[in-house]
Image (cartoon, rainbow, N blue to C red; front, side, top):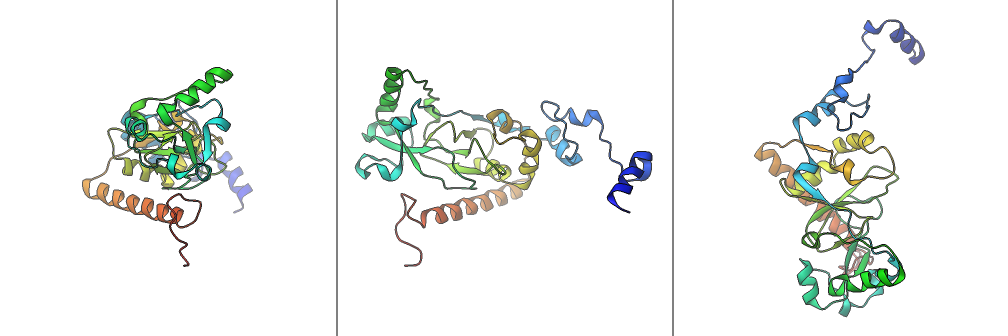
Length: 263
C-alpha cells in the first residue's frame, strides 16, 4: 500500500484502522487549547496529571540596560581587579567594591552549562546603567533584587533549533537569557525535564516559533516521580552539568580556564 492509496482509503473508510481523529476535548487539556494533532495521548494527559512550572516557580524577564554598548562587555575586556565572578547576592556584589559582574545573555545552543561570555556594569547596584539610560533617554528595566545572583535555569530567547536549558548561578540575568527559579520543585529535576525529549515535543506546539517566551515555559507540566527515581534523575543531571562545565572551561574562552587539555 502506498501513502497515497492509504490516505484515500482512510478518507473513504474512517474505520479502516489507521485513520486518526482526535477528539476536541483532548485539546482542552492543553493550556490555551492549542491544536496539536500530532501530540500523543500520553503527552496531552501530562497536562492533567502534572503541575505547571509556572505554579512551581518564578520566571523573570531579566535586566534591560537600555544601551548594551555602554553596559556590557565580553569578560576579557575588563581587568581582573574590577571583576567579581562569585557574588551570591546583590548585597555581596555591592560590598565587593567591584565594577563588572557575570551577565547571562543567552547565547548559542548549549545544554546544561556554558555560554559564560558577558559581564555587566553592576557596581553600586547598577547605578551607572540607570543613570546613563536616564540621561540618554533610553528605556531600562530592572528585576527583583532577591533574584539576582541566585541559582536558576536559563534559556536563550531566540533559537533556530530546539530550546536548550542551562544551570546558572552568581550572575545577573539579561532579557536575552531569561531565568526560571524553581520554588516548589528541585532545580535539577526541572532542568532534566526541560532538556529532555519530552519537553522538545511539548515545545513543538507550546512554542512553535524561534522565540521561547516566559508564558510558554510556564505551561510545561511536571509530574513528580518516586523518591528513588527523583534522586536518580538529579544525579544524572548533576553529572551532565559537571561535564558541560568541564567542557566549557577547557578552552580559553572561559574565565576559569587554567591550561589546555592537550598540555
